[in-house]
Image (tube, rainbow, N blue to C red; front, side):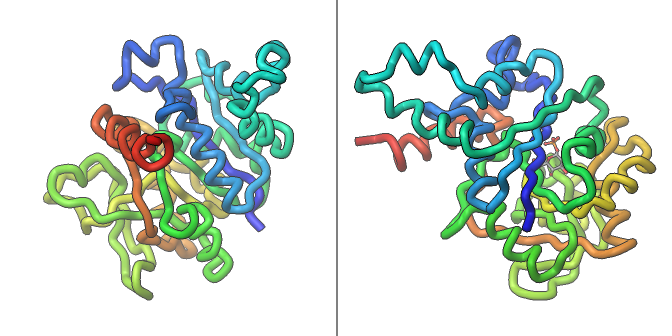
Length: 274
Ligand code: G1P
């Protein structure tokens, strides 16, 4: 039902310099897999087949990753290492990867609007690859697609955040309609703890209906002088309806060093340690 997933991936990743000087932050690995591949696998699990990636200057490694590497495959064919490329090869063969460049970094809302050309007039998923999620039972996007079938509106994934950390996120004010499901009444991008309308913070998983593009076109720069997706969602919540969903599972903020190290330890312990 939702076939396309947008990956805004043009940001500079300044928090990880110098590692991100020549490597896109989305290509930083958690153990042996780049962050963006975890996101792509989550989108596929949710039934999506087209990955629409917003890149920028210096991001060509992402395109090379989701492509065939004849030389490398020829080199390891018939060796004990062949299986290491199997999963990524099957992603490349079975799914579509489309790209467009965001030429100026004018904010997440702007990045999503740049993606209109890849998405068209249909509902779509959005994954911010530096938020690495492991859903409980099924992936976070798959949980949201289930909910979309019922509500047919934009959906944001939220989690409870206590204290000062709330000011790192978009924060919702919502009316609880079912356990873990809220109708969004207001949203504030990166409020101070005093201004925060609740402790429910938006994480980097969204399902958006395509009317968001017209709203984004009319959205003026907000917090930090950037065109904020939060501001457009707030308008959408008033015009139509937006649902906030307290997802089931874990989320690691791999845009921060601490979250990155926590994710590395968690995935190593769970999937790699013999
Ligand atoms: C973006 C959004 C913010 C959201 C966050 C989730 O902020 O603007 O609303 O809570 O992603 O990770 P960023 O972290 O890109 O500054």
